[in-house]
Length: 123
Length: 136
Ligand SMILES: Nc1ncnc2c1ncn2[C@@H]1O[C@H](COP(=O)(O)OP(=O)(O)O)[C@@H](O)[C@H]1O
Ligand SMILES: [Mg+2]
Image 1 (cartoon, rainbow over the protein chains, first blue to last red):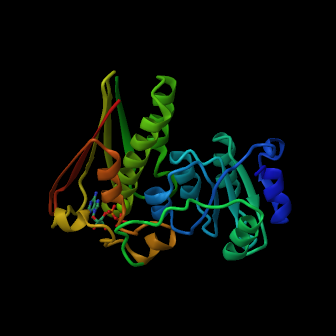
Image 2 (tube, chains in turn green, brown):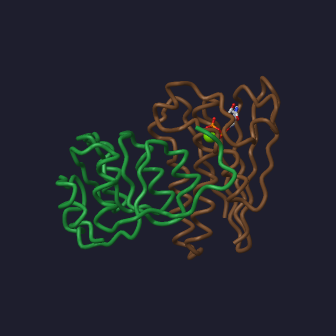
């Protein structure tokens, strides 16, 4: 799915990377826990999160994640946006909450990593 | 090639800067993206641990054509029971750290998963040394 489509579906505002919206994402992941993103994400996904701090960008950088949607109307600080810009990322913000955002994208065909976690722990 | 970094224990915001630099350099050296990703995740987890559990420290990275060897040394509180700390989900992280999206107790298991060799030595009250090796 093109990021321009993601933008439209989530009625999102583009904070960084306006001119790169023709880039594609193939899977998405919604999480407020960067530890889990680091542990379980295998692909270069679109990350949706309600967590706003610079380590979200860092985590994305380490995972080669190139696009992030901040949900529930969250707007990262200038500092965070600058970091994202340096890393050539695309940052969107939507007013929808995390669950709805994921649902909207999923129903339009942007799915997630299918595999169930083996030997996972309860959280 | 040898690289040295100081990690500031008071600046959660800056945590990951060293890992970011190493990632950049490995890319310039033409290392495959799959290997870089493994190194980046393992080193980033270790760097974050230095900040959230141990007040920062020093990182030494040695890059040869065959491997990347990373040593992270801190003078924090140490780990009383390393086997316990290695278990998935075990964490002593504060509520504050959890609110920042960390402290799920997956860092050490992740380092083990993504490295070819992981060695942790620790002495309570003295500090912890984490050695990560990934073959290129
Ligand atoms: N450098 C360190 N200094 C002191 N304790 C540490 C260090 N690294 C890890 N630990 C201990 O090991 C536990 C597990 O670490 P980890 O698997 O990274 O989980 P988390 O960081 O989410 O707590 C930590 O909660 C902490 O008690
Ligand atoms: Mg950790």
